[in-house]
View 1: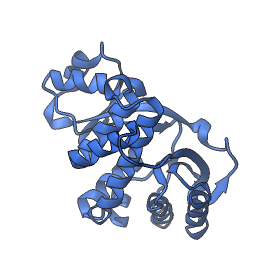
View 2 (view 1 turned 90 degrees about the vertical axis):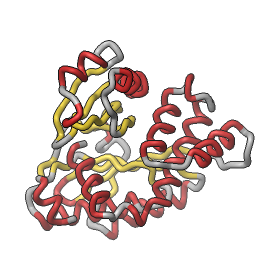
View 3 (view 1 turned 135 degrees about the vertical axis):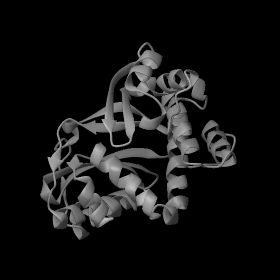
Length: 249
């Protein structure tokens, strides 16, 4: 989690993410529609949808776009039906990759993911090869300069906080995926600012990458996968030192 999230943060700070804002918005809207169609269009009764909507808001997706996505999912506007697919594989250095797709075209998704692996030094694996390394977890990110670990625990322990860790200049607050919105609401009610919240897949083990060349290969494959239109999320277990992440950015 930490290596991947740090890489995403660095790319954003460097401005690389700005050029892909339209693609990011489309990905987040697709996630809202899929969650609403699966569990119902009311965020109050659908924790997965509530998390997807909040994630879109955190990324500054316009409210009108979010509302239209909810209407499409509820049948009020014409939309498409998405299916969730997972692909498993390895990046250079033995890094495990778990790729989540939301697509209306299975063949296109499979072709794009396979191409990204083949062209960037990776290898696809059979189902079950790496998914056992990952578990669904809720993550709420809180700036370290805004509060303390004790205050976070006091505010959110009863709401479902399971762990608080330090990751650079932020606290990573962990909880069950279904408790993300409850924990976030408890923190914000206590005056603790939240940078973002999401349901993600955390790896139980990590692969240390200390060679800059290998790091570049891993991150090149990661970016290629995330650039595929049907890819919703790419989960990985690499751990690359901050100095190397900055250098390859």
